[in-house]
Amino acid sequence: MFHAPPASEQAPLAAGERLCDLAFVDHRGTAFSLYANHVFGWPKALFVIGAAEGAAEAEELARFAASVRDFGQAETHVLAISQGAPEANARLVERLGLPFPVLSDAEGALYRAAGLEPGAPSCTLMLDPVLRLERRIEGAGQGEAALAHARARARTFQPMIVGAQAPALVVPNVLDRDLCRRLMAAWQDGERQDDMVAARGDGAQLANPKSKIRSDVVLAEDAPLSAEIAGAVARRLLPEVDKAFNFQVTRMERFRIGCYDAETSGFFAAHRDNTTARTAHRRYALTLNLNTGEFEGGFLRLPEYGPQLYAPPVGGAVVFSCSLLHLVAPVTKGRRFVVVGFFWGEAEQAIYERNHAEEAAGEALSV
Image (cartoon, rainbow, N blue to C red):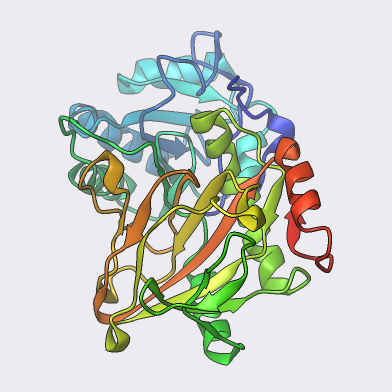
């Protein structure tokens, strides 16, 4: 069952972090939730007012108001947030003729999450359809910049008629660009395992370049990079896995940094990820792209459900059932870097412990 995350779970808003269900009141004095069914599920432009009666804020609000129809065409909701009382916000709406709500954040929860000090200038928070931060806009011309962002998003995510679609989840902004770069550097400096696949029913690992050409660096459980990935995945990705697949992840396999290199036509032939005793516990597979745009080819494909090619943006993830047949097409130019991992829950942990009884501890991470 989907539950909106409570205000007590609110983290500082960086790209990929979610806005929780904060206690807003609109300018009519009515409780307002961004998780209400008629509001949730659409991108948002939140103009966070630094000083409700300031001239600069009034000018920005007027610009948002003049463009509200254009935002609507980009399927983006416009709202304003202030720490003023609903009565003051009602006067602001009336004075400027605003066609969108002005919400009161009397407790200042959003202001603290956005890192706004008392008296700080206004800013605009661009949120994706599930209220994860995409971009923070500051300074002059916020209305224009916000509209440009909304239009670019609408161009990227064009509606389409779907005749076949794999049950896969694509989530952007799981890892930030700095962490992606540091992970690629860790691959350069790490101890690599080339082309390893499960070669027998007992899960023994052998090199098989006919099935897979990828060079991996396995991160230790106690490595600082492992903790960074696990923390970002837990906050930014697992709530979406829970909602999309109605499955609570409690365990994660150690992460691998992989490289598919065009010089060796790096690829991974069609396979499933839970067909041996050693892998029977796995429920969902994770692929995180680290350098989208710096290579050609290398698309992830789930051929049982259609010809779609998956290529999440830098730091973006694809999650799908380990039972699904999938492949990685050859990289034809450059090198594709990824982080791969596997998820499971407590019901599968008994399978893991039985089939891995003789292995050293440290294979799996607890969420």
